[in-house]
Image 1: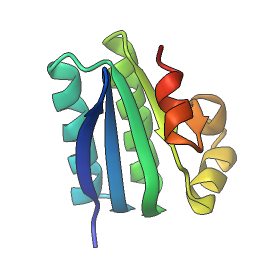
Image 2: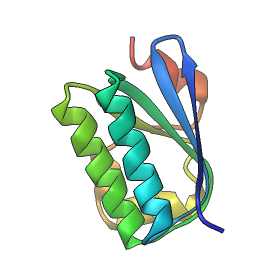
Image 3: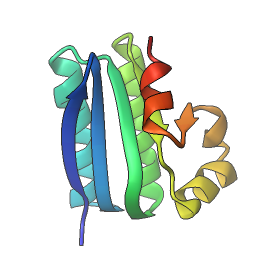
Image 4: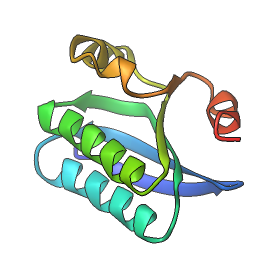
Length: 114
C-alpha cells in the first residue's frame, strides 16, 4: 500500500492527512506534488499529519525535507503533527527533529501558526 493524502482547511491553515507508506516512487511523488500544488495556490501555513503513516523510507525523509524547503522558500511554514514512534525515531536519528516543529495535538499545531 502506498500513501493516501487528503487535504483540509482549518481556518487559514491547510492540514495534510497522510496515511500509509511514504516510500520511493508513487508515495513520495504524491507527497511532493501535493506540497507544490498548495504552495502554488498560495497556501503558506501547512500542518502535515503523519499519525497514520506506518512507514517512511529515506526517499520519504528526503521528500519531507524538500517539502519543508519548498514551503520555507515561499515564505511559509511546514509543521509536523502526530508522529508515530517509528517516524519520530527516524527524525531523531537523522537530526531532523531539530529542523521541524512537531506537535502531538492538532489544536496546538494549529494555534502555533497565529
